[in-house]
Length: 136
Length: 136
Length: 136
Length: 136
Image (tube, rainbow over all chains, first blue to last red; front, side, top):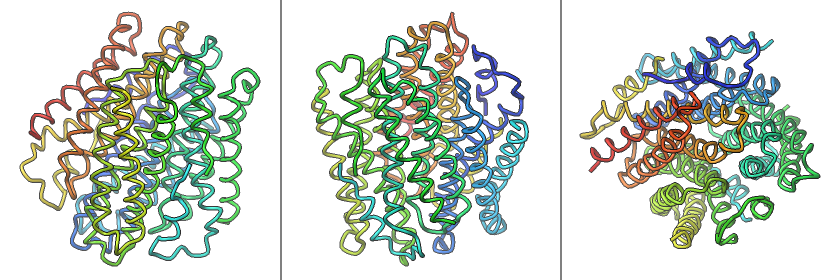
């Protein structure tokens, strides 16, 4: 897939300060990829014969999708930057991704969509934690 | 406005545990009202003649709207409850609402939409902090 | 619930043209109330013992929630108004609300959350269709 | 960027019918890439010195971002498929992408972020129109 995340960052007309652009672009990309995986995994779980055993997974997927999408949007904005908001939403995102990776991980051997989604969640969790370290 | 937030909470078929339903319903309602106010305030700021002095306000409004909408969705789900996710998104929401109330508050005397939006943000910030206390 | 939908509309600093403000405010409110009801109904369905018979209902609830939230946001913006976008998203919203009202309506006698959600969807469908008539 | 859009589609446990999986995956990817570009472009416009001439562009970017994100979510779900909802949201998405591509296109020579965003919008508009043809 080709996104323009990095190009949009490079053409931002204001001052990006000392932000690590590579880490920022990666984090935005992980968030939008993870949101899509979670939305698709919630739906795939709904179509499993054993859906009644996957209800916690579906719910966690939905929370994670919403939080990842919101985090991607917040990180895509640089005007009037407020470190407190970025930090708080990154923490929420890392928390949701960890919970969703753990939950999907429990069904990874049985359901391929849960395995793939767990990987997306782990990648996003790491990217959020890396951004949190960089933001200080 | 009539919402069915409280009725939906009362008809949830699972176990809501010891949650304070009144505080929960209020918090969801404050989140969705605040999200709408922030979206409308960002747009109203865009139409002010002095828009170049309101760019931080517009950006904060957009972050706050996204985070409030996501918080309302997370709080509207009870299946497979994960206190860590609820706590983290409530903290992000209280942070965004405080920042947006402060920013809109700076223009409250000049712009009525900022005054109204600041009130919505304060109400939502309080409701989120109250929920955080109740969640422990 | 108290929202500031109407007040935000009244304090918009630009020209609202010949828009019917009461219909507009009602439509925004119906959209945000319907989005919340659908998110809560999807979750309530997940906790029903017969969840495997409610998967279409859950999915339709999720689509309807997303579309209603987006419609509320589009209608809350007036700057640089584009009638084509408003009309297209209102048509999508009316379509999703009709589908969700029909689907929830099938389980309304058995599940109170589906009954309440179907009412919210019908109200929102009507408000969207009314707005479409007014937009011409 | 690596997304798991295609893998999630391939591991869906239900029946996808006669859907063109390649077109579907491409459309989802275009939607999420376009949503990010639009969110970033709205913010970049906010930081331009001539922001007061870009207010219609900012607003159209915001509508397009919301509609693209919602379209990506609807297309990522297959359970309980309703062609009417898919068709209506794809039409809204193609409409918003066309409007945003036109608007950003007007500033493409002056602002690189508008040029890149216009390309993302054109790509997404085409992908939505292609999906509409396939859905019949």
